[in-house]
Structures are given as structure tokens and as C-alpha cells.
Amino acid sequence: MALDLGMPILVVDDYQTMVRIIRNLLKQLGFEEVDDASDGTAALARLKNRKYGLVISDWNMEPMTGYELLRHVRADEALRTTPFIMVTAESKTENVIAAKKAGVNNYIVKPFNAATLKSKIEAVCGA
Amino acid sequence: MALAKQARNVNPAPDKPSLIRELVEIADYIAHLRNEIAALRANELTRDRLPMAHEELGSVVAATAGATNSIMNTAEEILGLPNDKNYRATVEARMNDIFEACTFQDITGQRIAKVVEALRQLESRLSRFASAVKAKDEGGIDPEEVERRVRKELLILNGPQLHGPAVAQDEIDALFA
Image (tube, rainbow over all chains, first blue to last red; front, side):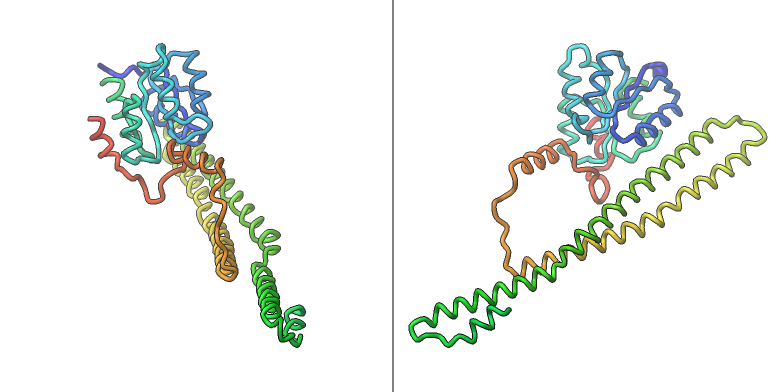
């Protein structure tokens, strides 16, 4: 199954530079429909208003972290199947396992490149 | 100091030597404490060094943000260039903009070095003071602070690890295989 380059993607990060980097990487990969949110709360509001094909979220944000956002998404009947990739500078094994248990589809450690992002999107969204 | 000297000059009554001795010890301790407090140079710290550290770190944040924006603007410009005969010349010119933006590192390095020196001074003076007055921490940690720390630890809000990722991407990938 080829990647749907038209699917809307939600990038969640409180660091605008990171949002911009991910946007540019996604653009290079051919994705044009990219929205962003600065934390989990803002992301949830966006998720209620638009159906996204993928969420790419940072973990370290306040007031709602990426992990908390993931749990909200997985607990919501309408959102629970939304593919979710966690992106973080922190990668202790127990955190990765906690995210996996909470239903994350993949996990990327910062810093990363376009190839890594592409391979994770393909693994999650099917290629 | 004056109190300690006066106390020493008093000719102790035969029945009260220990009381006088204790007063002398207290006076000596107070004089010692005053010297140590003066050595802290707290006014200099709060008037000069700490505001300087705030200012320098603020400048570092501004400089790194400015450089990052400049580099990203240039990169986005390059990505949007038409593939025509001017392409190479335009890319080379934009590359020089990126090199120029990277000079922030030298300046921020110097600013951070000043902050590190201020912190070293503060640590050294506090350490000397704590040792001189045999200070002991008491009262435990503020419950709100404990809660904040637990949240940060649990939700990994402590920021990136000091020496790169604890687990490499390959090992993480294995967990998702």
C-alpha cells in the first residue's frame, strides 16, 4: 500500500523551530497537508475538528505532554485508531515501553533525519 | 568583635567562670559568623553576578533563536529556488548567509563561559559558608516541589539527557519490530 501523500498530518511540539523542521521534512517527503499544535491540549482541540491520518508528537510539553495526549487519543472512541508517532530527545527504555503500552505506533529519537522519519511513517501508515 | 574583647577583659567571678566562658564563645561565634556572611558578598552576587547571568543567558537564547531562524529561512529559500542557470550562484550566496549565521556559536560560547564562572563563584562561596557555620539542611523539601519533581520525572519533562540518547534508535526499533 503506497503512502497517502494527501493525508493531513498533525505535528505537536512546543518548540516552533522543531515544528518548522518537521514540516520541511514532511514537505520533502511529499506531504503538504500539515497542521501543528503547541501542546497536547491544543492538539486534542485540533483532533476533534479534523480527521488526521497521522499525529507526530513531541513528549516533553506543558501543560499536556505527548504521553498524556497519546493516552487521551487512545481512550477516545473517535480517535483511538489514529496513527501516532512519538518524537523525543528522551529515550529511556522504560519510557519507550510505557509509550508502547499506551498505544504509540512508533518512536523517534531526536535528532533525526528525513530518512528516519520516512521509514517510521511507512511503518505506521503502510508502504 | 568588641563584645568578645570586652568579655575576655572581664575578671571572672570565682563562682561564674563557666558563664563568662560561654558568653565569650558565643561572642566569638557571632564574630566568626559575621565574617563568613561578609565573605559571601551577597550584595555583589545579587547586584552584579546573578543579574549578569540572567542577561547573558537571555542573550544566548535570543542569539540561538535568531541564528536558527536565519539558517532555516535560508534553507527554505534554497528549497524553493527554481532550477535555472542561476541556481548554483544563488545557492552559493545563500550558503554564505548560513556560514555568517553560524558565528553565533563563538559569541554564545563566551557568554555561557561567563555564566559558568558566576555559578562557580556562587558555589564556592556557599560551600565555604555552609562549611564555616556547619549548616545542616532541614525541613525537607517543599511538598509542591516534590510533586513537581515527580511529575517531571514521570512525564519526562526534564529535557534532553546530558550525554545523548540513553537508548539508540536501533534498540527502540527492535522494541517495535
